[in-house]
Length: 188
Image (tube, rainbow, N blue to C red; front, side, top):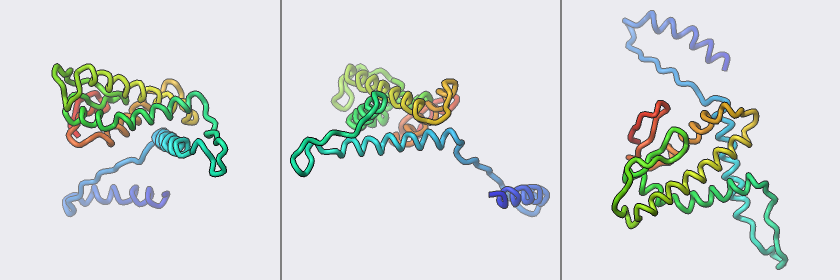
């Protein structure tokens, strides 16, 4: 890593001084921050917990009852939220594709266009219920991330929510709308 930095330190001035000889555009892209890495790790752990929890059978091979792994209230709420999001995913994606919902920069869905008629068989009340349910689940997951990321402070909640928002934006269907970090709406 130190050699790469040293090479960049030496090559950047050289490339700049040879600008007339070489037509080079340099784009320096930073890697994920420590907080991003921690949030992503905690989010992946939630997915692993869900898989482990849901794969436990109620009955052991010998016929006895099998107790699921122990969970905290916060962990159980996050697991329910992930299951619920999985259940609603198709509807949410259809509403994102239709432009009715958009991915907010705070990690929550935003109703962009309040429907007055059914969309793909979903009444306006159902659209509102799906968006509200999804946002409750997302808020639970953001709180779980806040509780499980080591050293995260309450004043960093906005940053954690933004990282969570980028995960949702990446998973959103092509053509859906999302807010960038400055709150400007963009199309994916």
